[in-house]
Image (cartoon, rainbow, N blue to C red; front, side, top):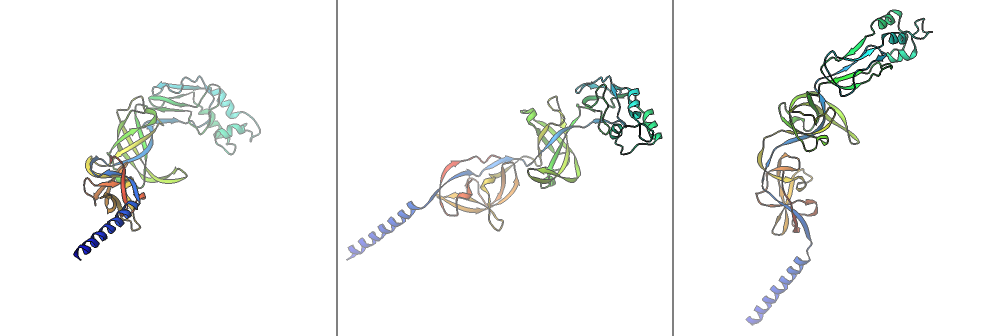
Length: 335
């Protein structure tokens, strides 16, 4: 009798094992990628963009349109303060200002009025002042390089526009635009790395020297974003840098330290705002709630919730808590 009982027990165990094994082998298995949690050297940065500009630049405006003659410079020429940029044909300019008839007897043409920005004919005293104040020549107000010249011999200059621009290309700075959600991390004196497509392969260092007191709106894609402008001095600029070049800036907001980090794609968030990851444990995906800290360019600091060496799934959208999982690829956790 005992022999039959024992046989029955063994048969039940075999049937149970067969059922469990069948369920196990038929259960869905998800292929995942994982990253091993380890400490990395990291520094917190804020990324933004901007343009190179001159710290010293003078746009030359005239009170009236003038007839230029003997233009002596071209864009790119180096000039000294007081050097003649072009001469003015005073007689031609005076004739242009007084040419024509039918305007209250002053003989001022509509063309000239539009050039000087007038909507009505000036009185005789004003016209006389214009004629008397026609300059003989236009000179450079500072040492520098001619970066714009809007005068040509025998042509009338345009009122309201600079006739020339002189820039000191030995003194350059960068104007950057920082998003409103990151500006609280930025302070005067922070180090900035500067790169750009126009000088690919080179990197310059700068310092935050001014943060503007107010924000502004700028176009971002199909909408607008709120930014705060800042000025960055450039250490050891050279001929590779030119005004109006677009640049990328990375502001160092903290010192290098060793922290646990994970790629952003590892982190999920539930309806209550709790951040969590899935850890691969005994062949299954297991949820682990985490607390995150500093954000880096491609990763985020893990403050608590995980232990060093655990394997974190980098495609959490493909798994659920407790699902069987097999590793298809191990990725790097680099900052």
